[in-house]
Structures are given as C-alpha cells and as structure tokens.
Amino acid sequence: MQIRALSWNLFHGRDAPPDRALLTWRSRLLRITERNQTHVQVNRDLLDEFAHLLAGAAWDVALLQECPPRWADSLAAACDADGHRALTSRNRLPSLQGALHRWNPDLMGSWEGGSNLTLVRWSGIAERRELVLRPARPERRVMAFTRLGNDVCVGNLHATTRNQLLAEEELRLAAGTAVEWAGGVPLILGGDFNLRPNASGVFGELEQRFGLRPPTAPDAIDHLLARGLGIDEPPRRWPPEAREIPWDGLALRLSDHAPVEALLTS
Image 1 (spheres, one colour):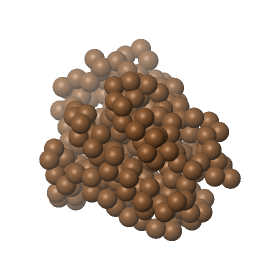
Image 2 (cartoon, one colour; image 1 turned 90 degrees about the vertical axis):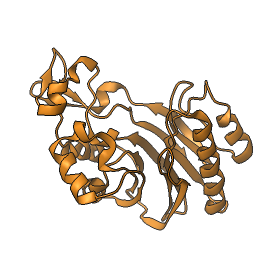
Image 3 (tube, helix red, strand yellow; image 1 turned 45 degrees about the vertical axis):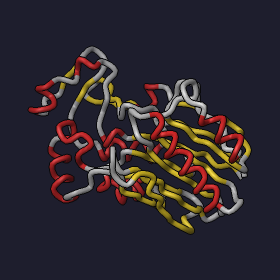
Image 4 (cartoon, one colour; image 1 turned 180 degrees about the vertical axis):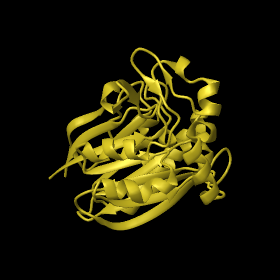
C-alpha cells in the first residue's frame, strides 16, 4: 500500500513574494497590494487560497505547521480529510487574535497563535496524542502524534528556530517518543525541523538509533522521515511555481516554505 505524504509550513497563512521589495510598510500597515512585473503581495486572509491548493494536491496525509488554529476545520472540510490539531505557541485570546489576523495578517504575523495540523484523507484517525517538546521558552513546541486507521503512525512537529541545540533536543525527544508510541508499526516523522543535514549530525543519529530516513536535502529544514516504510520516492521540495496561484494577471506565492512530499510503501 502506497502513502503519499506532504509536509508544509503555512507561514501563518500568509503570502511570500520572491521579490522582498514588495514587503513594504504601506502594505503591512495600510493593506495596499504591491505589484511588480510577475508577482503580487496582498496582505489578505488567504484561507480559501491555501484550502484550494491543498485540496487539489495529491496526498494521503498532510503535515502542516504554522497553521492558523481557526483554519483547522475549514481545511479538513475542503480536503475531505480528518484532522488532528495541536496548539503550539501564542494562543492567548483566540477570538480576538483571529479577528485581528483576518483584518491584517502581515501585521499580526505569528501573534494569531499557531498549531500543527495533521490531515488524513483515506484511512481515518484511530488515535490522537500530543507531546509537549518545550513548554515555554523560547516558545511552546508540540508534536501531534496521529495513528491512522491503517495503523501507520505520524508525528508532526515544528522545532525551535534560531537555536540548533534546542532544535536537536526537541527532535530527539519527538523521535524517541513517536517510536515508543508507534509500538513497532510504521512511522512517519515530519515537519519543519529548523535543522539542515549539512549543518547537523542529528539526522545520522536518528537513522542509526531509530531507522528514520531519509532527510529531504542537505540544505533543507522541512523533512519527512520514515521508519518501517519503503521509500518509493524520496522527499523532495515542490518547485516555487507549484505553490503559486493567479491573482489579477500575476502570481501570488503562498508561504515562505515549499511543500515537501514523499511516496512511501507499507
């Protein structure tokens, strides 16, 4: 049985043009759409756009990070999937934060609060667990652990940024716990690790200790590691244009991360 897995950091539901000059203060403060010859930057609520792109993509299980918490049910419905949401950091006043983020996503940034959302299309969800990898400082980090209806397990996490040692610590904890909770059945461990294989030896350690492999690319931070599964197509990043949608005759690029996908066999 083949499983197509997808991992994507949604950048809190925002767009990220390749031309950084489009990220102006007048766009951030006044929500004025900026344009160049090829792309736009819109500072708008983009739930429908992200939902459309995800719904049209071919995957069986999707691991999403930096997902606006209020999007979970809508994305699951759009994709005809079951969802498992694990709240991460900055979820203080969700109704107020959500309203402010809908009004001005770029000004709010990550202050709407975050979540890791796992979507499962075909097998349903048999079990949901959460593991707090870091309770607070510098930010709350959580792994969503999901057992699918076919008894394949999925761990979805977003590790600490800007501190490699802390990120490695979180990844080791996530891997060890996910392997224990999986109880010998196949496991996918993925997400935004904020770790590059060309700068961290933790990937070799995870393969040696747990059989989790392979990383996406030497310079990648988004990964889909597998244990007890065949690797039919190793993890690869989507080309930038694959996450772009038309907008007023130009292109709108969703997120500052490229989705990563892999085809696995159980």
